[in-house]
Length: 171
Picture 1 (cartoon, rainbow, N blue to C red):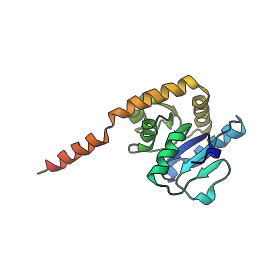
Picture 2 (picture 1 turned 120 degrees about the vertical axis):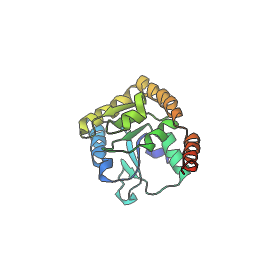
Picture 3 (picture 1 turned 90 degrees about the horizontal axis):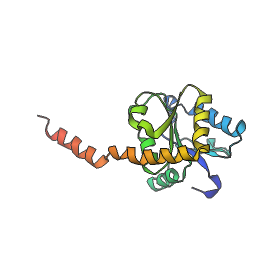
């Protein structure tokens, strides 16, 4: 990730309508136009041709690039209207990145108190919660601490082993 596009907010995931990217972009525009915050929005995925000076679509990237992008983000935003689980915010937490997420479906259960939540239908609420975390260093620090702790309950190796055991025990 080039130094010139920092600081940035990050979204990782596909661009299906239920991922709510249009509202995320609207909330981001509100932050830079109304609140005059000097950030970029990096959206991992999407067509690079749609990138602007402030909104960067990465296109497909490899795992090493993705790791670097996560680690250097100022904040991870997950605006989804519906999720079955929600791995990207956990990946951000694992890398010490504070998370602001919609309070839709399972996300509060998965992310617990390690995220700040917004109404995914309300662009102003989304922008306000993002701004709050960006500007409150104590809150940001607390979210990082809670995220690093909270992600420990999701041990991928243990999950794989337990799943394999279940499959082996099916008659």
